[in-house]
Every structure is written in C-alpha cells, then in structure tokens.
Figure 1 (spheres, rainbow, N blue to C red):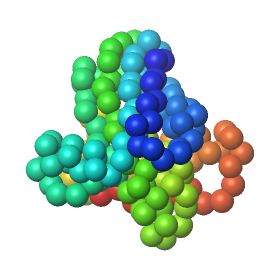
Figure 2: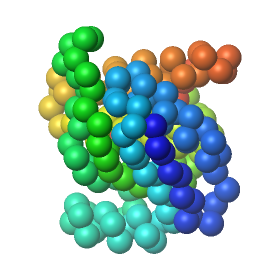
Figure 3: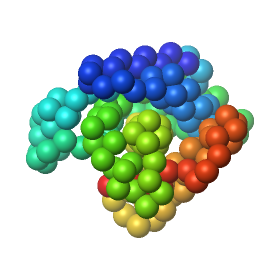
Figure 4: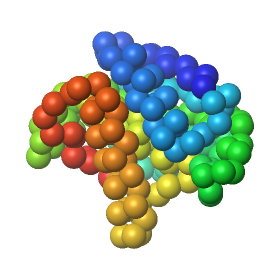
Length: 165
C-alpha cells in the first residue's frame, strides 16, 4: 500500500498515526495492497478555499475526500480486490482540534484526525451518510475500524465519537 502523508498545515500532527490508521482501514476493507492514497493536512484557510470551490459551502471543514479510480471493496471474500489510485483525503487540524474538544467523549486533535482519516477512506470507497441507513452503515464501520486499530495498539479509553457531519 502506497500512502503519502503531506503536512502543509504548519501544525504538528501525528503523521505516523494517520499513516498507520489509513493502512489499517484499507486492509480491513480489503483494498488491493498496491493501491495508492494521498493524505494532505492543510490549514483552515486552505480548507476553506477547497470547501467553497468543491462544495460551495463557506468556512473550513474537517475532512474532504477526492476519489480517483472509484475503487470499492470486493463484494465477496474470494474476489480479487482491484488495484488503483484511491485519491486524496484532505484534513484540517484546526477544525479537528475544535471538534475533539467539543465532542461528548472529549479527545485530542490527533485522535480526531485519526477518526477523520478513516471517515475520508470510507468516502473514497463510496460510503456516504446522507440517508439514515447510509449513516448507520458508514458510522458503524468507521467505529469498528477505529476501535480495531486502537485495540491492536493497546490504546485504552473510549474511542472518539463521530463528530463529522
């Protein structure tokens, strides 16, 4: 799995954790090991520009996903996963810090960025949360991936609650 993490935000973030959780999420979703992903960490001004340009919405957001090859997880366990370029995930640590501090399970900016990375991966794989049933599926899968990753690392305490909209 080729995953590039590029921090352009000026904020110190745990890039290794972002890389590790992205790799874990893609493995859990059975994405081809030669697929490629880019994660870019930007400041609030850059995220606001992207949010306006692509979503026509004001202000910075927490995470945006830009799919490339529209890869999907294999439908059956014995199917060979397709290989390709997943796309880009853009994260904003300023928004993540605020969301983590305001979440019911208060957590750090880095924990929020890890959650947002999984959220971004799922969007790249075609998951969405516009409808209640889609939301339940996506957020359930997101929680399972974050919890599994945390358990593998022996991290204790409650996992971050979904704060993405």
